[in-house]
Length: 204
Image (tube, rainbow, N blue to C red):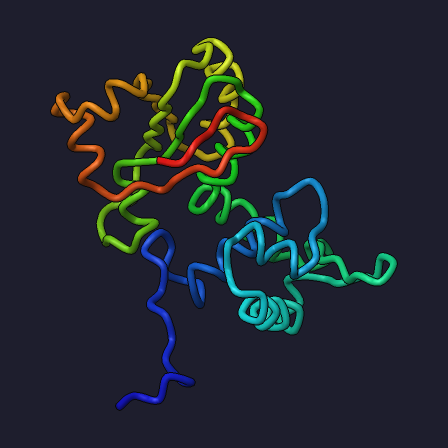
C-alpha cells in the first residue's frame, strides 16, 4: 500500500505549474484580495483544512512569495512585493484561477440571485479535466436579479481575466424543471458554485 504521507495531489489542470490546486488558490487570494488574511481566514475562504493551509503558507513564506506581519495576536499574510516574481505571478493567477473569486466579489450583494456557478470549459479545467485553455468564462445565474445590475457588476472583469465572460440567466422554475436541453446539459457537466454573500442565495 502506498505511503499516504508522501502522496501528492495531481498538478492542477488550469495551470499545471503549481504544487496543488490549493496552493494556487491560496496564492491568488493573498495576491489579489484588498485586505490581508490570516491563515485561519484563508482556510475558511478556501474551504480547506487549517493544518493543510498552514503548511502551504509556510512553504510560500520560505519561498519568499508571501510575507507575514503581526497585527495584535494574529499574523497576517501579504504579497512579497519586493520579489520581482510577484507581479507576473499575480497576473498569471488572475487569468487562470481568477474567475471564481472575481465573480464572487462582483455578484455578492445583488438581490434576487438564488444560485450562481461557472460552467463550461473553465469549470471542467478547475475540476481537473484536461483540454485546451478556456477561451471564455460561462456563468449561470439562477433567480430573478435585475439583469442590468448584474451586467454593471461584471463590467471590466473580462479585461482583468483576459477572457470574455458570458452570462446565462435562468428562473428557478426553468432550472429545476429539467425540460430545457441546454440547461440539462449544463447540469450534466462540471460546475464551480459561486459562494455569494448578502444575496438571496440558497442551496442548489
